[in-house]
Length: 392
Ligand code: ADP
Ligand code: MG
Image (cartoon, rainbow, N blue to C red; front, side, top):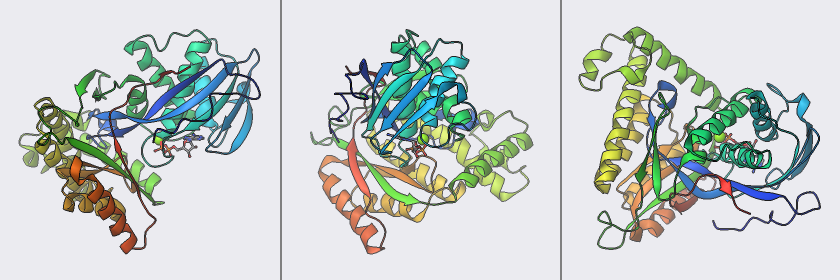
């Protein structure tokens, strides 16, 4: 996945002013916790979205995407909630949000090319927003890449582009990961306070390595699409709000994991109890995973991955057959642990594997899908990549 995108050469017939890129992300653990004021632990992917850009003096955005196979012109004065429709909302929305924040933003010529699988739960949307946001910051002198506090403000603008203009509900994890992650580190993000910590995430060497062979994080894009996705997400958010209200707390973050079953007994129905159990135990698993990573205890990290998957499948009910099968096949091939990642109902899974079991796991996952007549999945090993920056 180190394809050099062919965008460095020109933007609309002339050399670009510069090229900026931002990574996709994969969440190691902490799923469906972001809208509960919880904790998440993403890494930036080595796969990035590139934007070759030049500033314009007028209010026109011209944007071409190799993935969309289209060139679109957008008058920035016409951008707002729901407009433009389609993929250009993710680009125009960023300029709109920055202008709303009082920044002097004008038009741009933008050519986009990406290595991040689109719609696989690996956050191609945030990679696109953050690449464009990084470009706008530099081209218009906004200084939003200067330090983590500025980057966090840019992340907020990118979230508003996605929520308000593209109309896609999303917490802030994706944009924070794309703008704040560091190479070889996972990002512990507290979604209540915005506080971050960088946790070393190097599997190839060090005391956690298996007799010098090391471990690998294998991502599998199941390429499954289930139409259930949208309504189910909103329902889960609503269930969490109801459970928190019945428990008398402002969010499920405030529920103590010790004595949890006793606390949950007061909830009015079993569905709410299971939804709340997932969120509270998942937040505890993020803390445990950070501690385990710091101790290089990959066996424990794997155990936590497995527990997270079971909780998402049984209590939160957001998994699907393709995710379950990919996880089970990876485990049977020797994974220390595996789990679905992202919102669920399709998207991707991750498996923590001894390096010498990776090829077997990829084959086993592909065979399990073929046996069931499903589309071939795409598996690839990843390391923790770097945040958004200028490339050229
Ligand atoms: P994910 O972020 O998990 O990949 P989303 O549904 O959040 O999935 O975002 C995918 C959408 O983002 C695409 O349907 C498209 O509108 C937009 N998008 C992402 N990357 C690109 C790209 N390189 N070119 C054009 N549009 C893109
Ligand atoms: Mg997305």
